[in-house]
Length: 165
Image (cartoon, rainbow, N blue to C red):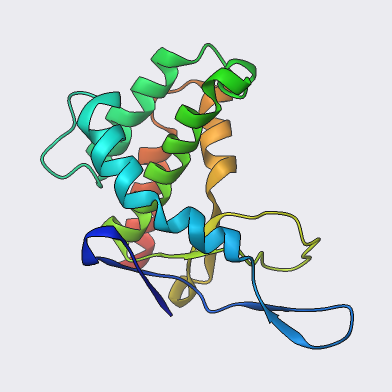
């Protein structure tokens, strides 16, 4: 399944469904699709246009992840700072950027269906079924904010690229 985004670009998304209490199949979280639909605007018109400077020609790359992670570490003193309400919108843009980088740079697809146990809570991930991998994007972003190495996202991207070779 592909979602048509602003500007005509399509983004791959797993066609997932969940079972309702009554036993019928229902579409999975329409809010997730609406969230994805905002990626082009928030990333192209805000994040890359002014929130983060010094991006390489291909921002959706290992080098782009390094620049973005350095900016996140500069903006937020840690995970608690990143998650305060005043910073939540910017933190969300980092989540979007990291996910889109795996989608555009490596061919992953968005999903909101966790592997294994599904408690029904909001879930944002990218997956690559050919290598049986799913990455929960908010966890990658919070881990980088906690560890503060400056290379978390690029390290994972580089390793996923090697697995795909």
